[in-house]
Amino acid sequence: MVSTNAYQAARQSAAMIGRSDRGRILVSGADRASYLHGLLTNDISALAPGSGCYAAYLTPQGRMIADLFVYELGDAMLLSVPREQKDTVLAKLDQFVFSEDVQLVDVTDRWSAFAVVGPDAAKLVGKVTGEPVDVLHQLSEHGNRRLRFRGGSAIVARVTDTGEPGYDLHVETADGAALKQALLDAGVTELDDATAETIRIEAGIPRFNRDMNDETIPLEAGIESRAISFSKGCYVGQEVIVRVLHRGHGRVARKLVGLVFEDGRAPSSGATVMSGDREIGRITSSAVSPALARPIALAYVHRDFIDEGTRVSATAMPATVTRLPFVHRERM
Image 1 (cartoon, rainbow, N blue to C red):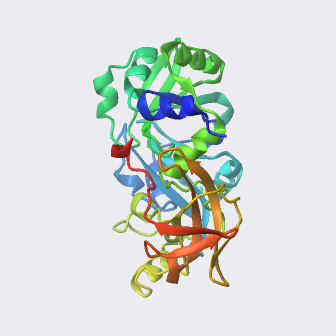
Image 2 (cartoon, one colour):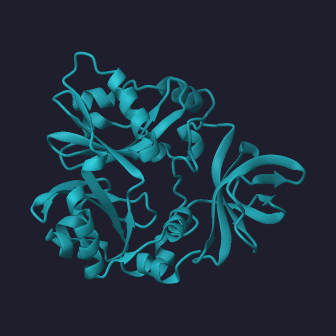
Image 3 (spheres, rainbow, N blue to C red):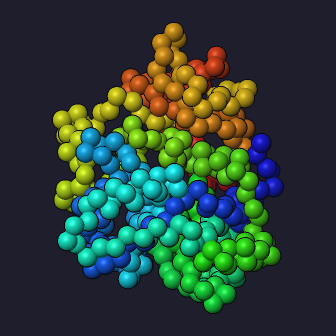
């Protein structure tokens, strides 16, 4: 159940989300950028110190191994990946290191992280870390800075995958509890999982292992504008992506869409989406939207039913296909 107080804090002031669901891999060495550039979907070689990007790691068949955030720290790159995919990603990356000057280290247990989101996120992150608020405001999406917290190393990065824009704070594990308490003392409200998920779903942001998996092509999930560079050179899985874009004109068999239900309870993940008597898809995430006061869901549906306004149903409840996101920031 959504916490009204926590939801309002995220929308109107600031709230924090524990990031224990993320794994972290540190990539160092002089060849780190060119090495990752040849494996990931986005333009890694273009990253300057303090910048970052969203990307995907694909199989040769164009299916997703994981989505991830890449942060160029200046002397190394930090990869933030879904924790359940971390070991797979690390093992596959390691397979392609031959003579390159590249070192891969699993640093998941060395760091503790929290996302601070909401309109007052910069002010309160600045209060806790000592970083100037204007500097935090100036960080572009995925932009990052090194800083110190309680004398230890820390990193702040601009994030949007939570649904409400804000900042990821990475600190040494020994300082994790102190960071959490400092944020609470500064007036940041802690988000429970259900409320955090509702905010993500309202923003229409797909989550790996929920809305994407190892059978997903990025074009199906609609992440290509954020995760794929269409001007870079080769990367694993590129041939499939290019074939779909050029020969298939970008049409895939199914697409992730938003569904708004008229009333009732939010349907369960995995529920079948119907058009009359025809099965056309399945629901991946759902919630009752506080902003819309209606149940909403993310669902993959057959490409013939993706147009906005298309009428469908799930668990016998009528729904309408809508554009994502469900909720725009200016409506808050």
